[in-house]
Length: 375
Picture (cartoon, rainbow, N blue to C red):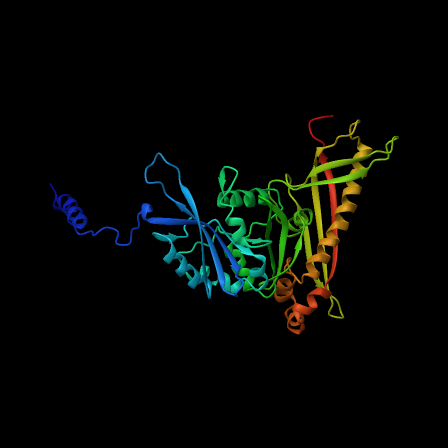
């Protein structure tokens, strides 16, 4: 037998004996996993942190339980330290699915309240959603359950579902951090509210720099997501369309433009007088999902529906653009284009003031390509 054949197993055995094991291991039973975190500004100006903790079961046959805890501090780190003093066991944010910020906290700026997430490697950011609550985030989390779901599970599922419906863009703490560091790009976040015992969707919260500055309703939010060149699996619009039938009925027609590829044109140019022009166009392929009329949609009808939807959505797109400019939210990254391709013009601009002077030319073209399985 060769010496090398004997030496290798011996080396492996001695190496194994010298291993000391994992010095930094933590047992799940000793941890409290934070599923959702709420941040508010308390009446005395301190940071109020509310956390939903998921408590592992003592035996496998039982399910997890949840606890809601609140703490206060001069900043988020001190509030988190106070939170750890209040609960039994350590808190880990490994399962943190979202950070919910009350509107008052968003109005005072996101950076200071999110800074600890970017500094602490133990806090996940890549798949953590940032969400704005219309009132206090704590009020929402203190619901504890929504139906049979824990409140954190419900909010997480709700956000993911509305992303698939193209109402919310897929933004995480990572993407928000990049926007906060980019002078030429703003952003929008999911905006939800507590109405009675229900958690409902308000639309999108618009931001200028790090500050909440306005909002869009759900229909406007879908258009904004499409105008940004994003979409989920579905993007539906229901509009009242006049088809000039003999009985002069105006039909409510639902189309879905999320099932096919969206063609987007976004061009930023600078005129001789240094004014900024933006051409923002969408070409949408639509599928009719609901047409409750007594007769089928014929070729002539389709042309009318195409034209009507194109005119309606173009008009609504102009309204969306007006709202984001009113909020001073450079959601499309016009400033980013100027930095990249018209840098001298960018340097001469006072963008927080000049963005509202940008001339947008939006246009939406809708073409129905399928009317469904019913002829």
